[in-house]
Image 1 (cartoon, rainbow over the protein chains, first blue to last red):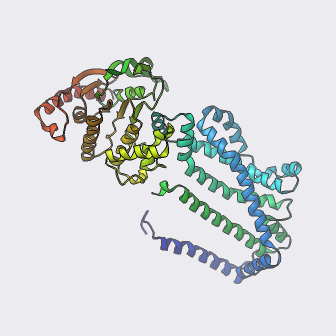
Image 2: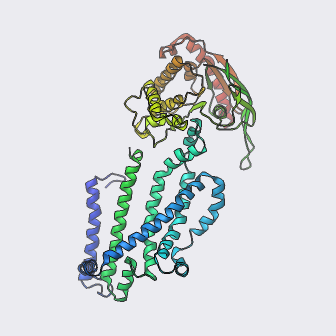
Image 3: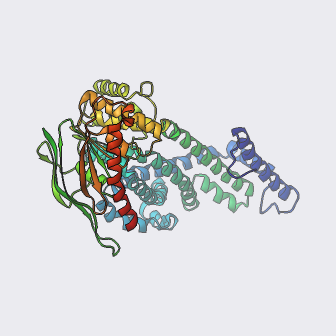
Amino acid sequence: MRPLDPVTSKQRVAYGLAFFVVFVALWSWATFGGYVSKTFLANPLTMVQEGYDLLAKQGFIYDIGMTIWRVVGGFALAAIIAVPLGVLMGAYKPVEAFLEPFVSFARYLPASAFIPLLILWAGIGELQKLLVIFIGSVFQVILMIAVTVGATRRDLVEAAYTLGAKDRGIIRRVLLPSSAPEIAEILRLVLGWAWTYVIVAELIGSSSGIGHMITDSQALLNTGQIIFGIIVIGLIGLLSDFMFKAFNAWLFPWRLA
Amino acid sequence: MTILKVEQVSRTFPARHGNAPTKALEPTDLVIGNNDFVTILGPSGCGKSTLLRIVAGLDRPTSGRVTLDGREVTGPGADRGMVFQSYTLFPWLTVRENIAFGLRERGVSEAERNKIADAFIRQVGLSGFENHWPKQLSGGMQQRTAIARALANDPKILLLDEPFGALDNQTRALMQEMLLGIWERDQKTVLFVTHDIEEAIFLGSRVIVMSARPGRIKAEITVDLPHPRSYKIKTTPEFVQLKERLVEEIRTEALKVTEHA
């Protein structure tokens, strides 16, 4: 091993998998070896059994579907509002001066603290879940996109002006395409956070979803189910991240060239 | 025939952090005729880039005015093509799309755009690279694309701000010949800023020498070397003589800058 020496893609996969092997080995050692009580931590085999039970007999697929729909719905709602606003803020300094203080303030408001209020306003239906994710994501996305668009290379903007571009052209043909990969990265990042918000939203006042299953399992002290639920969330996150990355690479071939 | 007129143009950058305001450019006059190739030569910090940016409309003069074909310059526009020292190709566009950027902005149809772009791609010797991304090109190729991009707009005047400054010597010499070839063929009006004495003489029909701090025009030298010029001209006695004279002019200015720094 030497600093910054690259690894081959085969090695990369092998090392990545090795971690999971070590992790499961340690977990097995702690649980099968009797070092940790069953009440606190289920062993891997129990976890797999409970997971199979959840999927085959308790309709857990439906819960997973509900959670994914909430994340995607709330996140899409946030993106539809945040992307245009962020671009406007980045492009026009007066808009930025007008909105930036409020957005900076609002982004520190914890989404989970809104849950009681949102239940009051929107009930315990789907709208409330979507709003938790929306509040948790929208301000972050606005601010990060505004910074990205505002940091567009000035010389590219100047070059476009000398080529006859007007303000509309500058936004559509310089600011947007030059920020697009960063915007996609921001969305990928915030989608990860949205997963945290959805579980929190489902822990309180919910009758479906992965978070709801986890609360139910807690009441029954079924740690195997809880761990299975958490692992499912991790896997879905990994999968969506992978898809997002592949989509971005396909969308912005000029970055990889 | 006069095309570009710079009248009493000056630029002072406002005071900052308690420092005195910086006088980048003293009131300057400059007249450029149709099909002229004028080079502006000066040490760094002499305001030559500031002058060019004012002509491009990217910077506003503190006093005075610039007119192009009798119309005052108030902002950047397609009638003044610009090539920058930094690589300013749009990374998300291919070579062809970069060159067609200005045409597309004017609403030229795609077929027509591609026809014009491809003609310029051939002219700057980039055939076969039409669909490459800027990232895949060398510095010299990127600047050739940038020149083609500015020319594709058919500007009244081409402004170049040390376009070859970041290139190695061999590439730079080739680029100079290419640019001069285009000018000799198409008779464009060109204003070219550089700190390289040889480059200023080799390319220019007139060399404007600028002095440093505050920037102003110090001398103007007509270059009577015949066209078409090849690289061999750089070793002729006439060329060497001009070079010696300009070396003296620039040296005193460069010394002034070092002493002030």
